[in-house]
Image (cartoon, rainbow, N blue to C red):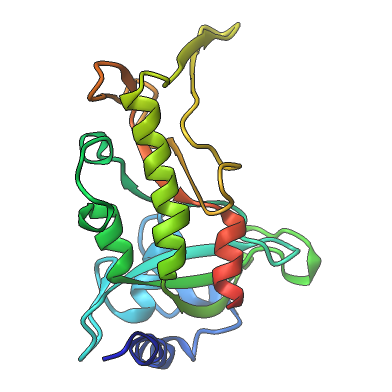
Length: 234
């Protein structure tokens, strides 16, 4: 099945599950399901419940690419409120000689549709409590090949350069409360407008060893909020 037709098939398949929930508040949607404990992944859990599944991977009949749930909360200007987090960075792979198209990062995005559950947290132009946030629907997206082979690969190449050429700078500061803050020059949110790295461990002490012997806070891959906005508008 060609990419466009497969993407359309996934979109239609998911739309039939959520059409009765569109433009409803989170509180109203929750009333349709048995109560459950509150947790940090409340919006993801709500997406699962609308689809009647228990995990973030969606099985769509006759569609080979992976389909995974991601959630987006829009601000008053229709921009995603935050960047979107993905997997931990495997620095051994990223800094090694493995070709880009063989990396886990490339294979994931090249073979995955992102089912973005869109929530509006600024209905009527002002921010509301989570229970009053409105579910707007699903947008099925896939990272374009060009962005994979340029924007995301460019970031991988920059990470590899910094580590392999011993140009990675890692510093620590301690604030007045005694808390340690760590900084580095890995690609940040302004790197290329598409993606960046950011610490993603349980706490600041969740460290990893790099191939060059340095230690650094565990890093995760993020898509920029501005880039998510572009995907939603395509």
